Amino acid sequence: MFGDGLDAAVQKAFTRPVPKSAGAQMRYLVKQLKGTKAVAQMLRISQRTVERYVKDQIKKPRKDLAARMEREVKARWQPQIRAKAREKAASTGGIVIDTRARLGYTAPIGSTDQDRIRHLTVALPPRYAARLFDAQEAGASDRELKEIAAEALKEVYFQDGGRRAGSLEEVRFTDVEHLEFDL
Image (cartoon, rainbow, N blue to C red; front, side, top):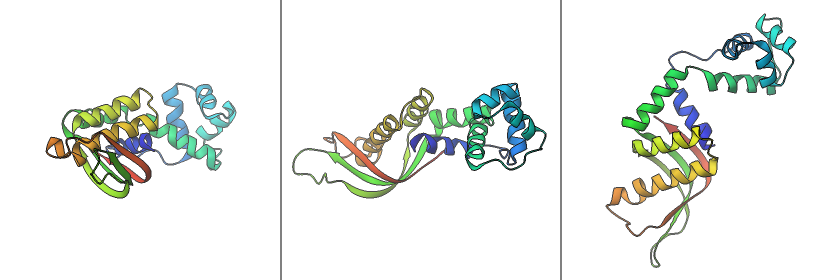
C-alpha cells in the first residue's frame, strides 16, 4: 500500500504515456531485458508466447498476465524522469501525504490520546521524502514505510514542527482506509 502509493506519485511525473497495448508493452519489455527468454522467465510464460505478443499475433492477454505486464512496464518506464522526481522531492519539494486512517498517539496521562479516524492532507518536508524513497529502494516493508510516515506526521501535524505537543512519544497509524502521495 505505501510502496504502491510512492510509485504512483512518481509516475505522475512521467512525460510520455506508458505503452497501452499488449504488443507494445511486450516489445518494450523485450527491449529493456534484451531478449524474449528473460521476459518469458520474468512473466512466467513461454518464450514462444512472448514472441507471438511481439509480432501482434496475440493481442489480448489473460487478466493476470496483463496485470503483471503493466506492473513490470511501469516499474521500468522512464527511469531518468523517475530519478529526477525522487531527487526533487528528497532535496527541495518534499512530499504530500493524503490519508484517511485511524491515528492516535502515546502521550502523558491526562491528554486526549484516543485513536480516531482522521482525514489528513499534510506536506512532509524533503528529509521525510528522502527517507521514504531510500527505504523503498532498500526493499523496506509496508510496515517500515508506515513507521516513517507516522514519525513524519508526529513531527509535522501533531507537534507542528516543535511548537506544540512536545511530550508526545509515539503516533499510531492504523486502519488505513485511503492513502495517496503527491510530489
